[in-house]
Length: 101
Image 1 (cartoon, helix red, strand yellow):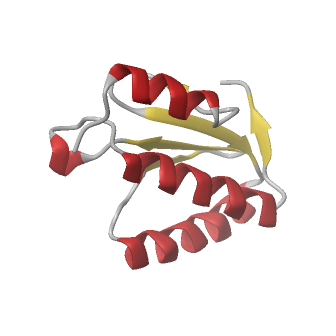
Image 2 (tube, helix red, strand yellow; image 1 turned 120 degrees about the horizontal axis):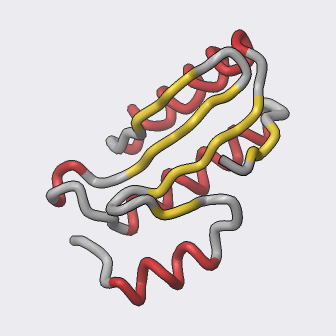
Image 3 (tube, rainbow, N blue to C red; image 1 turned 180 degrees about the horizontal axis):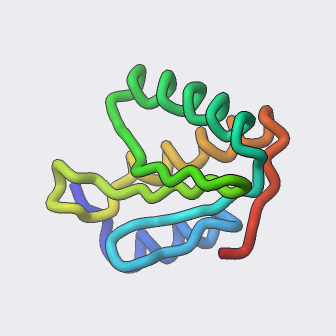
């Protein structure tokens, strides 16, 4: 079920570093390419387990995640913020540095 605008504002307030871009939340991390590949594999394994997936863009020294719920008409849901928290934990485990995009 899509979140209301007020719920999105509250959820984002508790997620430093994540930004809203339309009906998606995004975050970029600085990490070297091969470290980014390892982080993606870690995130993908968690995504498979929870049944929710981010769009991922890997560049030479940057890794960007974009999250929305495709099954909810590309709207933001609680599952998006849950995945974002999991990604933050995985990023910390991989020593990825938050980047202001």
